[in-house]
Amino acid sequence: MTALKYQRCSRCVMDTTDPEIVFDAAGVCNHCHSFESLKGTKWFPGPEGQPKLQAMLDRVKAEGRKQEYDSILGLSGGADSTYLAMKMKDWGLRPLVVHVDAGWNSELAVANIERVVKYCGYDLHTHVIDWEEMRDLHLAYLKAGIPNQDVPQDHAFFASLYNFATSNGIRTIFSGGNLATEGVFPKSWHGSAMDAINLKAIHAKYGSHPLKSYPTVSFFNYYFWYPFAKKMRTVRPLNFMPYVKADAIREMENTFGYKPYDRKHGESLFTKLFQNYYLPTKFGYDKRIPHLSSLIVSGQMTRDEALSKLQEPLYDPFELETDITYFCKKLRISRDEFNALMTAPNRHHTDFPTWDNRYRIAKKGQDIVGRLLGRQIAVYS
Image 1 (spheres, helix red, strand yellow):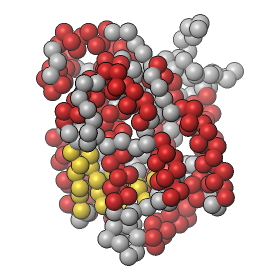
Image 2 (cartoon, rainbow, N blue to C red):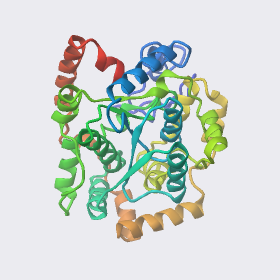
Image 3 (cartoon, rainbow, N blue to C red):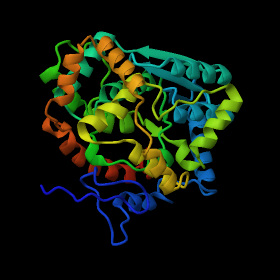
Image 4 (tube, rainbow, N blue to C red):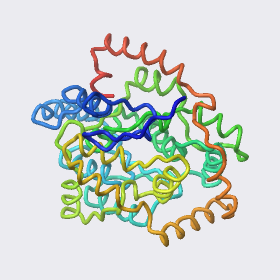
């Protein structure tokens, strides 16, 4: 494959570190064009979003009126999910709040979770992942040498939410995921965090400790059992309202004393090192680029401001050394082993079995069934 000549989008800051990027005659990238198509279809930041949001809330309340909880909220301690927790209180919802502790929580994340849960008066259930299994899975992914090292944490998080929803008879999972801050992301950089086939294949090849209690979601359950048999859905209310992250953080600071992180996903010590050192050093992927591009196309930042942000160093050298030392100690590997993992040959998640072919077939079937059921999947998924 011929290497792309370096180019950066003339509207956002996405560039040819995404090998699948395409530019039009004006130098605007496909990510910008794709985001424009979301307006009025999946993203409703203006007044048109209010009736859609209200219909969603009314439905959740009606379905859960005879239950202790009407929904489940996955709470990481990050800005998006924490802001959603606060808004759900304003909306009069009664969620069971679930936090998944995969062993990497920062002290600030724990404090922010405690603050918002206390302010809202929610019941919090913290699910702690067995550390020996989590550690073994992390090491398997590092040995696999693929970009998406966040899958072990992310899969456990979402699988736990589905398990709790099922055991409590709850049909709606609330997610802080949103297009305003995450609308741009190159698919070439990663695979699905929900792909249990890929996860188990990587662990089978490089793991050494059996995953007895680590939660997973099968392909059948994720695409058929949960949405159709259980009529479960994940909703993302932040896509139906004006969501400006800086304003949301200020509101949380003033309302219950939320303390912001110095970088995106600073609530996880693993994700901090993964995004700001592992990815850019090993693969040349700077996740600030799609994040800042999302803020540009959603109108929260100018391109010049984003370019200025990209000039800032990813890590303070002393802080980096401290974090690597902690990382090695927690995973019980030496610095030489860590360096060897960083310089080992790069691979892609598709070098291992995936559920991609099943997904393509299932998506067609899901769309057909969704239309027969009155488009509820298209609206609420």
